[in-house]
Image (cartoon, rainbow, N blue to C red; front, side, top):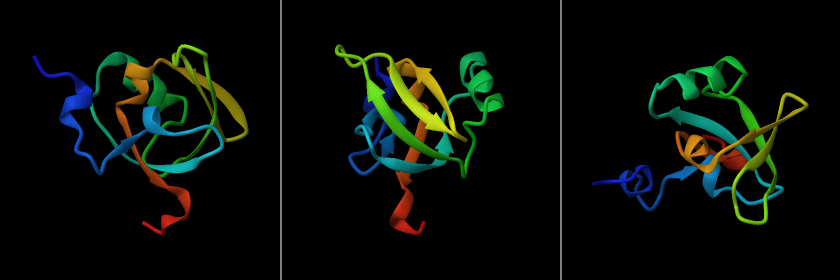
Length: 90
């Protein structure tokens, strides 16, 4: 059985792969289950600029800054949002 992580190529990055202090732009959203749709209603949409604020000691949950607010996601949820670095000009 494939996991979501195994479906990503080596060049794809998601919110889950970001490091604290990094800023990225959401480029693509994979999976439209109810949890992902709820997060989209909170502003996690294509084109949104997101900053990785911190991660828990065990790596889950992850905290992000979005529109001046903090939002915490489970790693599994963060993997649905593919990103590119904010300064890449893409």
